[in-house]
Length: 301
Image 1 (cartoon, rainbow, N blue to C red):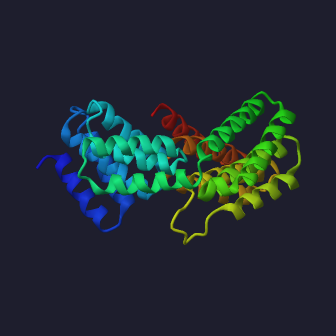
Image 2: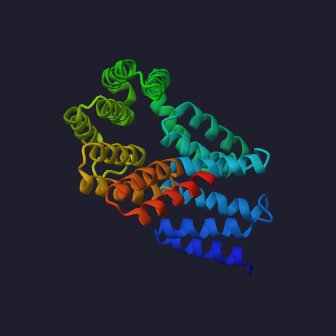
Image 3: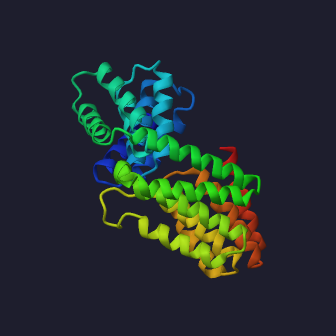
């Protein structure tokens, strides 16, 4: 057996025993071992297996990238890759795109049961909530305007758009269904950031507390790792701004653990930057420099 074969076999065994993080690491190592033949059938299998692990770990963006890579490499003929992509898109609050991917998976493999069941579930949601996609598009547009204003330091405009987003998320809770808390939480965290920039620490803390109440219970079947990661990042930024360094360190540690488990490069990059600033505040210059170097490596990758 080749090194890649061995790693994939180990990953398969770990996956079957529910050790998804360790399995993902084996598949990632197998993909690296196949760098000389990235479009081989073996590499595609490893990517799809890694995708399955990432879905279990709530690493939906990373899982999406793996599925899209296999689709591209196969010329769009890999049915399982379309199925995995559909799962990712559904988890990322893109039901119409998820339905399209799952439909393609069924066209390529009409006998497969799982894509049909997944498509039926997505279509049932869309039928029950016919305005869902329009509501999601509106929320994304308002959020984009708010973030653009925040980047240009137009805090008044950003606050206005985020308050509109929060109002829409709450008003459309029935249409959004299981996604209502996610969108409300995103608006709340955005408002917390605006409050920090305007020196309103108490208001920022209130928004963060409200967001935390919107998270699913720890034992819920469907977790919201993206919102949890954003919450850790914003909480750390607020604590750092108000000189609550111990609390900031706790939030950074929790966020880094989540970013690494979900393989969220964007979240990891931002948290490492916050960690570097925090360590510098403590006068731990060597550790701050190490965090900055890791952030640079993550950005390059």
